[in-house]
Image (cartoon, rainbow, N blue to C red; front, side, top):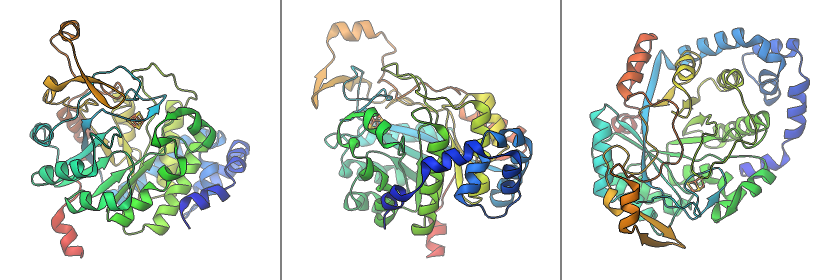
Length: 400
Ligand code: SF4
């Protein structure tokens, strides 16, 4: 049975109500348990549990140090393309946004990767919009093959594909696939995704299972907080993680907790999750899933990220750019607009008005603009070790 079938049977609305009605005593009881159910998780993200934030943080910190050591793994996103055939109301790359677009060549991607390696990164996440014409499975496999010659760990966050399309990418050396459901609320999902294949809610939800079948060893999931009620989203992510841990148990699992950031199109979040609630959620995920990696991106401001290093996060991006060519300026001379899948070159007046610093448009504005070295230094100051390498092919061979 796929997760979609399980998801359809879940009493999620009831669990949200249960969470809202939980008492401090209920939350304390769940906090003291060794193994948690989805109902316990609902209690830990309750308004009542917000009053227990200190003990929740202590337990989360203790569990994280016990399972992962005092270590924060660092990674960097490398945007390959901002072409997209979907319209997602909250995303700057949406098809109908009149932004500057580019798809990097394999060599340009290699240049970007080398720049990241010079900063220390050995764990790179290749990101792109969804556009089969510009970002095909073959193109992605070529990029992975070229980068994996030098970068030990290459993962992807790209448009969902069939398992057969993923296989050549895995064979080329990719080890992880990240796909956020964005929102688990069907009606909100339908409203947010107005055009393109992404409208298919269930196809997207089954993506981690197809990725696992194709051989990916690391799977990443998450919701984009700001589209629907955060407790509903968190419970759905927890149920999804629980399913994947049971059915895709050979893969390592990570959960990301992105909150919506400003982007082209000026979309405003529909719901709010404040900083304290984000901290509470990180701790609740840690208690529910002691061995799952928790990921925090540069969407969050420096001060909050620094605090979360101590509380349960295990993987962070640093020094990120969300536009293709952002690290080296690669692809600048190919910038264009795209209309109905056709490239429209920039006219001389557009180049002139764009100014000398013209570059492809980013997906969203980042909130922590410190350099990778500054982030690594801060991690050290907090008594943790920054680790640049997430995966070693040699270890895989020994395990096999
Ligand atoms: S969220 Fe992804 S699929 Fe949607 S417009 Fe942005 S890049 Fe395209």
